[in-house]
Length: 550
Image (cartoon, rainbow, N blue to C red; front, side, top):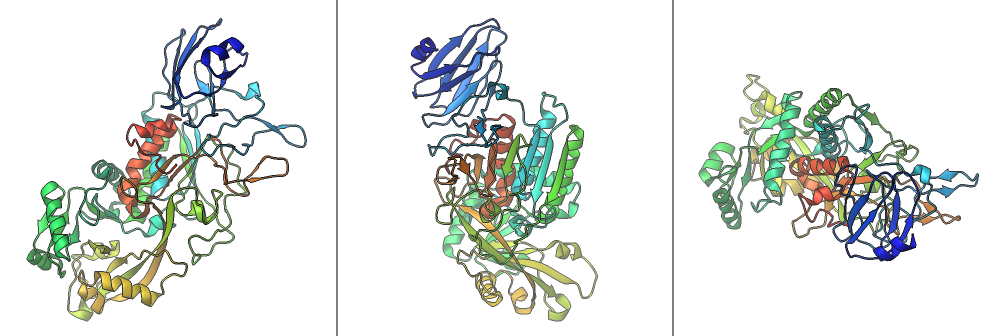
């Protein structure tokens, strides 16, 4: 409508329909006011591209909506009364049928609504996601699943069939990926004793999930405290300051107290308590999965787990080496929403199209190797306390050792995990190289273990480590859109994504690195809230800089 376009100072097209659908191409960053009148009532809206929000109301009843808009110019949005939709615009295949496949974007920051000929029959009001696929069922994936189900249970909107969630993973619950070999040390402090960003709310939220999981898997709780050891005068000063600032969480212990209680050689240390604890992560994940099943049943929904096997799996493959995408043959168009939470697999399994030198977000892949060791009191006439200690590297009791504590078995073997390496190089450390590195960094924590213990096996996981920023290393969460340079152009000019996953409502949660236990619950909750509201800006209410990675 030329008059409408003149008033809005923008190029606009009116799509004649009973519910007043409007397609706008924004060409100004200024707030825009407009109204449309018709037989069904008036529509009054404010668009503020800078804030990426839309608010509107109709004479049929006032309602407010927030909707994701890109800051980039040339983005399209489509609004309907009384709701609004995301467009999936048609292209023609050789048979002449409309095929809904995203076109290659021409703007690096454009969102997933691409230009084309509008098929009005496909523009339907947006509804709450009812059918969701989550790729990756580790700490990130299960956290999102739990919070989606929790939001569904608490929502006043009654879904016809409840929320349907399907988790795809390359292993059973708690048996694959970096999460399955995580140390499980839950606390909110950096190595220097500083409280990490969102440390306190993250600790609270993680403990809520741990308590839920412990109902089904009580053995996931190994210890209700852990100890950070000071080995230098600088450590002493830093950790004493931590104890003074956060006395409820951290208690300073002298050199003598540490030696008596833990047998460690130190200059003192902190006892971290009141929510700081040691968790058996595989058992925790299994308990959280059972809680998710309970919540799904209460909400008349479902959650299922499907193991997808890769035909080209190589456990010794260097993290940056691409492998075949085991999900490439699957049809994700049947889902309203897809969440990528597969950790390093997002890149190494080619779930997102990228090349090794230019990853789609600012991260490094880091290999971490740990050693599981056992120790017999009868063989050494020494004893080791079943407590977790860390000082850059860590030594932590395994669940089998915790269960044996207090046992009268004469030849009981205590089991510990010592970790973890931090490897960027292509060739992994050999077992002897790994033992040398871990021993040099943790011998003072448990000399009896290193002198008399036995190495039982090595474990390895590949972590996604985000670049350090204003708030340290923060997770990567939000809506993900294909960017220029992440696609190839086919002969007909359409986007060619090889075997990468493409979906118009694609979200991502990765970059937990070594802070998986502390961050997975809080960031998973924020992402689930954003998905439920179909609005990435919901996360900004908690973390204004959440989209730093974009």
